Image (cartoon, rainbow, N blue to C red; front, side, top):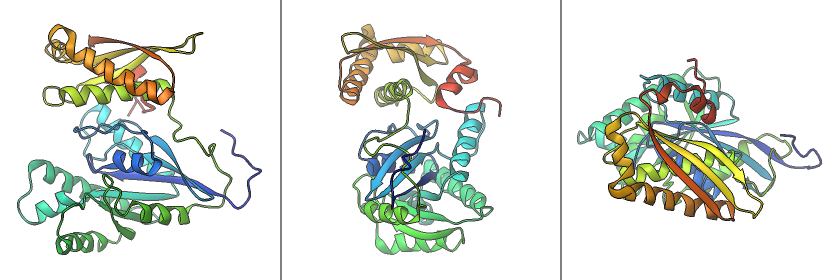
Length: 318
């Protein structure tokens, strides 16, 4: 990637968006870029690798790194995801720590769920790690819709007093409230530089990887109740055809034989729905016909596949 050195008066830099799983990072990145860059589902930890979304604000270009949710890792994949998140933060010109405000309030008022407790614990883990950084992060309190202002201010004060933040923004990534103010602030932090990407580009994610992520999103949207985080999608073939269409072959991996019929559905109807929805979105994204072929395979050790880690840009030996 060679920047356009002919530009003058421009700014460009990287912004890392970090946070606990399900804080709304992917929603925020998609809101800022105005396009589908990261997948968003009911599941937490759906982002498995940093996704660069490109945001323009006047003469300033911001490259957003949507990092995997930072949490206490247990499995190899967990460790790779967390390491990837912190790598994105270390290389960035600005770091936004996105926090689920509703979870913080619920725990503070003694009515939080187990998921809320995990979210608060993960926020505490991130704050401790931020204390070791030379520069301060920007705190973005997300999911403020319908919350009492007094309670929000209490959460804001408690977090800001930890000393790891330079600024605080109250936002709703879902509705866009407060997001433009955050965008303008981030633009002001970018260093003078030629743009790193063409003005009309929204992401630097390879199409075959984005195609796999879109299909994985559809899998979780359809079977989020029955299927835990035991599925992955690999694009095994991506062929540009002479008639202008694209032929894509993908494999959906599950860990157990009992999970295969969940993805297939009765008479293959679930897999058909997944394929149809993924194909429709890919057709719009690529602006050309897409022929999508899905296969479901059982592989108890798919999380130990070097090929899948390479597809996601994650470090296997960690």
